[in-house]
Length: 94
Image (cartoon, rainbow, N blue to C red; front, side, top):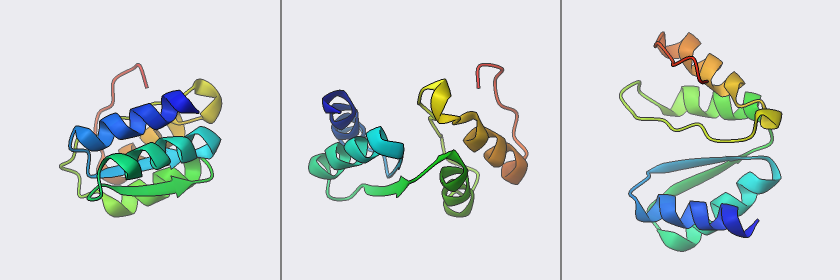
């Protein structure tokens, strides 16, 4: 969990505007983000499906999005949802 908190702090320090944490380690990442920047919004999601819905309603289509997590979390579902909503091409590594 310490590593995830550190990532959250770095995201906040790097100017990230919205951090979406998924699952147990996502909570740790959000804690770190909140401690690093009072202006960054942090949203917790139980799973990838919820994260995809949150992002599809929050994004305008002109943002840069980094989706990072283990395959076990199924975050490719987030990329799939964003593809549906914004009809963008996503690299084969997703």
